[in-house]
Image (tube, rainbow, N blue to C red; front, side, top):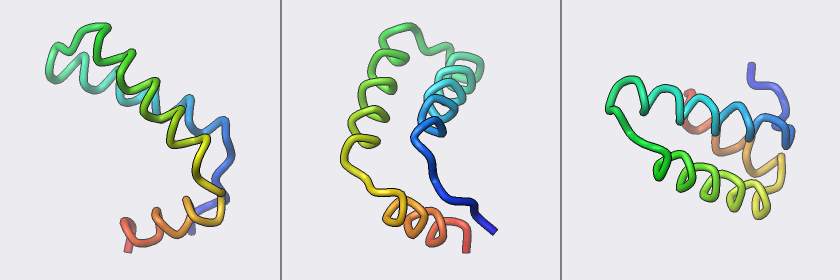
Length: 60
């Protein structure tokens, strides 16, 4: 079961992306800035119900 998306989830997504890509691919702070901007832009445009539908399609 996927719980309902909340805006604070975006910070986790950002931190996880930065941590994983820095460790596995040695990405620098320019990637951190890029992913922060991209995820925050996404968060401004998506409604929780739409996001949950996206996740369900990925998980199934």
